[in-house]
Length: 245
Image (tube, one colour):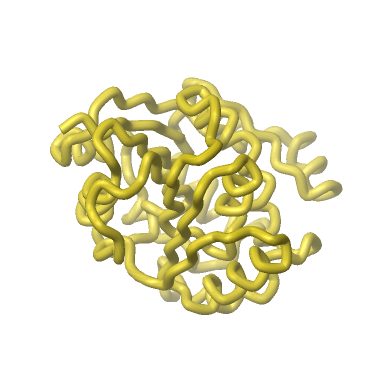
């Protein structure tokens, strides 16, 4: 079976903004993500921000609603088409482009902040992506991200349970070998000129293997994901870094 199957995003593009679709569950991750990001940016009004791997535009529109000047980049031209149409229907002037995160079509020192969520575990070269994000950020610009740790717990939960057993994620979307340990991403960011790094657990699952059955039942009923920002980075984690050199 093909792993890290990014064709999934083309296949899911038309369903991106359909509230009954499985992929729409990602929309509800905006709230907990930005509760963390807002610790470092209290006012998004007028900031130039980039969403790397924006998909159909969930986070782009979330930032546009807050007054940010938003650009979105994704390798899926079909997702970009859907994102553009939806933004126009809502009156958002978001600059969408199709392209690779390893070779982004932006000038250096362009953005005040960049976000890259649910993406680093899918890219071809995470070193190049982080280097590109550093390049396009202004001095002291902020980089926000989340991704998946690489260990037995993440393999059990994200692949065996969520893909193979529960079917909440399509089989083949993830490749465990591309998951990234927090110390690995910290090393890459430091080498690329980022500092003031802060990483926390992005806990969707109720403390590692202790899956919260009540939370899962609530998700199945409402589509809402219960997320805690805590110190448990064993499966997923969220972070911030600053361009310091």
